[in-house]
Length: 112
Length: 113
Image (cartoon, rainbow over all chains, first blue to last red; front, side, top):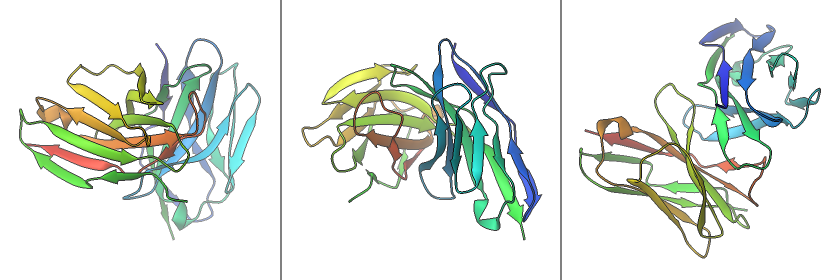
């Protein structure tokens, strides 16, 4: 069935370090891929998305590239800030369907 | 523009009871999806309502039911509560269905004792 697998956390980094959070997916067809962020005490917010192979989504310095050949959508940021501390979720939605599949989340802690 | 709101914020129930959670969608949005997020897990799709009709359901038993009203607000009802129903319940609204863009509310934290 359709699913998303992301690296387990927590991930702890120092401010200005490089971030990678791995995400791979299993799906029939060609899904749209997403990264959501959840700050403490808040609901999920869409961070970025990509709707077809080789698309790159980007927002707030975060990037992720839709890699069909490796079924991956890894999240990267060149220089993290303390304010980036949150839980990050990778998700997919199959085109034509309304159901989203979420990974289990990766908690990021950024230390000053 | 008002975002997605949910009530109540927190709720404590005992096993076997029934609960109703409420969600007000963002202005102009006719689609509401409900998710269950267990502690340390990602959200799991429960079902979606589009223009007052159920429009897709995840792997949840029939004791999870819902409604959508003419103003597109929505309710999630859970009967015969079980301990495993303890979770954060999120609703998300979108302009249409299907849609890549959904806006989440802050959630209702349900604890079943």
